Image 1 (spheres, rainbow, N blue to C red):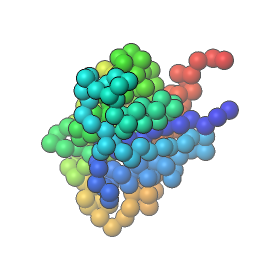
Image 2: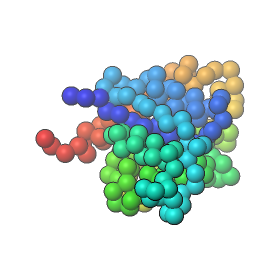
Image 3: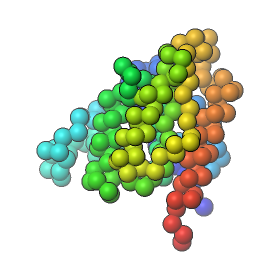
Length: 189
């Protein structure tokens, strides 16, 4: 039996962002039968435009995103909160991955959203928006699998999230839930 592949998409483009560090925690703490792959080129994917979403004009970065997403069994979005919602780069990735509608790379695949933000609620508005967008795009969102870490600027001021045992355990729990949902969603051979 092959491992479950979970594609992590990080909403912060900043190199040292706490949300990027949370994606690192996912890679480092994946259960034995889970591979977490990050796509680090979201900044290169142009805003979705139906005029360029064809074989003649489709940008290479969008093709690469769809290819890696097509190989994934599930999705983990790692999102900060910008002005009360998810970053545009995540919304754009969802837009590209939802097309063609009903047959996009996210269609019928399990997805979860985690992240951290400066505020006390840890970005719950952004995470709720991301879950809603993924659902409309056709993903099977695990609504009961949530992780929003508040007060990130103080919680991680002296420690990398990978060295926070509680956070590492919660991230592993999310990955296990995604892997379990993938096993349930997989068609019988």
